Amino acid sequence: MTEPGNSPVIEFFQLVPNARPPQRADRAVGGTIPTRALRYCEAITSASSFGWYVFLPLSFKVVWDGHDMLWTYDGCNEWLPLLDAAQYPEFRERFDQFAPEQARGFSPPFLTRSIQTGGLQVWTGCIAKTAPGWNLLVRGVANLSKSLSYVTFEGIIETDHWFGPLFDNIRLIKTDTPIEFRSDVPFLQVQPVRKEVYGDKFLRNFAVKGIDELTAENWQQFHHTVVRPNTNPQRARGQYAVAVRKMRAQDAAIG
Image (cartoon, rainbow, N blue to C red; front, side, top):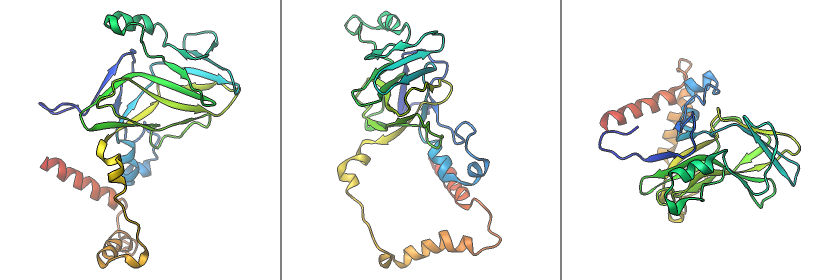
């Protein structure tokens, strides 16, 4: 959602029809965050809601024996060999129907095997485009329990100029066991990052100091953050959350 006259930070192009289009990430992660954390731990809820969820266009399963892969999906009554790449069902024809002549025949594959052992590339059916200077950190869903059957890799895609499939690479861990990927659970969380903040010049600008280098101001801040709350028997819970929310409300009012 954008204010009138402002361009969106990100645009999602849903090439493969999906009943669950990308949406703003959720502070409660779909109700999986404990109530206590949701109420008092602003650090967790802020991380949870940072970015957007991207869903798979259909549920499917993959089984891997350490060498060969098979896959199947909702509505398919057989296991299909995954030799190299597989298209989303009937998408190739749909893509060519809308694509200009020079792009026909180049529909992105839904699943692509990697040369890495157990490696699999999964396309969400989307293309994402960000405003100039903004790129996307692509990762698994923050604060959602991870599968023990596969690992999701993280990557930064320069989507301000790279206009291609929004996919992620995973590595299957378990063998000889069907691994399920559900379309009703977010598959990815994509987060906006400014290009300059992950540049080498920016990331080299840091310092590491010892306890003997803490200044009087540092100790005063420590007292305010740690000592005072823990020596006040009447202190209310969630003071950090309250303070952060007040600051955000003030910033919003000023903006």
